[in-house]
Amino acid sequence: MNQSVAARYCIAVAIFLSMTALIMFLNFFIPTPTHAVGDTSLRGTDNQPIASVSITDLKDLNSLPYVNYTPDKYLNPNFEIQGTPIDLREKNQFAQKGTFVFVIRNIDPTAEDFLEKSQSLNPYLQGDYSWHFTLYIPKIWSACNIYTKYVLTERVGSLSDYNFIEYSDYADKTDHLSVKTKPVYLDLSFYSKRQSIMPEPLYAATVVTIHYETQADKLF
Image 1: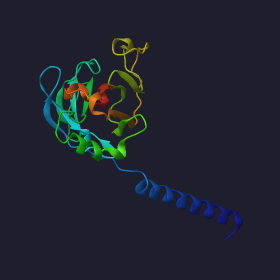
Image 2: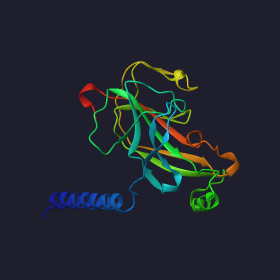
Image 3: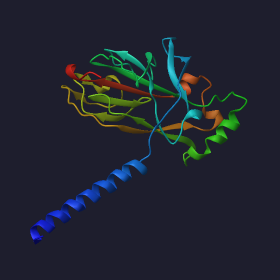
């Protein structure tokens, strides 16, 4: 084996070992999101049932397969909390643009077992005296703007004819659809002090509103 062939062989082996190490790292060290359990006992701002999940059912890293969907319209973040409950794991047909709304409920401050539930969430309590959870949103749209309550927290690509000031305090406008897909991880915080939590579950919840747009030939 001459030096040239030996060098190419060593490079190939090195690449193989590097890829093997990378695959092992991805398989064993990157956490896999768990699916949170949802229900439709809560009613939205239009007084219709909506899908929601309680923070007592959340783990360290979560995906929420149940969402509230409104086609062909961008709902006002944290004001229009509504939509048709759907399961994102099923084969759904979606409009070219619309709104997804995730609703995550806090503990009921009037419940007799509040202290017990509160103590069970101690692993998620941080220095701001709030419980924190990570929400994983998969890359299932071509472009989207994501709001946590009233705040614009993430932009993926850009939507056509979209004026941010209509939905938040952020002043910007995008004219054309710019396609970009990626998964998103959101940090969600919840008040932990009983006196700080509103007794109305809908308004005590953390609401994630997603305005999306996709190309006509690349619908879900």
